[in-house]
Image (cartoon, rainbow, N blue to C red; front, side, top):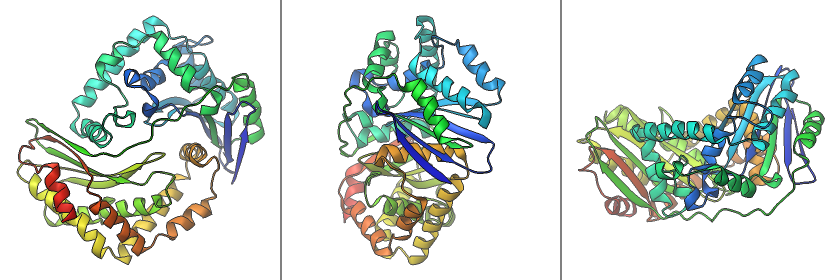
Length: 420
């Protein structure tokens, strides 16, 4: 398998990986225009814009977009995160030119029809309402907000309903002009693809774009805080966040392996101690989410209001204990899980295309797989324990709780117990 990189004269980057034996390809455009690139009065516009891309262009109606990709058995979709908006497709190899043309069309030529804006506004308001009615969705938005208060990184991707109700065509045009320049675009493709063909198609579709000024989002500042929302729900939803390394950190693999050992599977510490031994919950896990310049170790659990204080206390105890007695066996198991997850994921051209785009965005290169595996193998037990020490002694944490949580400990109690 071979990875090839090319940059057009206007700054648009192209990365491809041919995967022998496949008859299909995944390709997409990754745009450095996510939630954290929005000004406060733009919150939610990146996601709204993603929706509008499928509502018609100067060349195709919304129905034609859907019909052309489905006529060849493919699919096209998009998503918005806090750091990127991605437009992607999966097709058979002979239909790669069509897929790339469709993606270029919806990104470069949306018409922003006022009638369609109103239709999609209603769809997004329903999406916001659905998220608000889903406790184990909304609680993570609250956790993000209290972790990065007053910052774009802390704001919800969907945006507040009052902002979504106010967006118009001029707002979309301004956001596109600021954040959809060629230097902010990465075209990534994997599977049954030919690099030279992709470059030719990209030059024809995007070569006319003129580069413009690019501004970096504000640096992240993990501040920590808390939000308790008492409501008569069946379960108390608990989340705790501690700052972790970002993608660019040398410690990112240590953080990921630690999270796996702490709460990444059925054999993890939190699952075994709190669910299997104590029966205090059905769901509990830990994970690391990484951004360009920061990250978060997040712990989530759902339990009853009566058992919540004990669950929180045991969670903190496991965090502290991991700094002292994490074992070589736990390290080896978590390392194996991480390598297996990486390698199994690479069997999918869609996952491979997304990984290529992310690596180019972070490093402007694609490190060889052997280099990544070597970095995972290089994580030591001492490094794992040192990482745990740093987490529990930082004195900063964020916490969000929802449901019958009146008896839950407050954040100052949590941080005091961690550092004691």
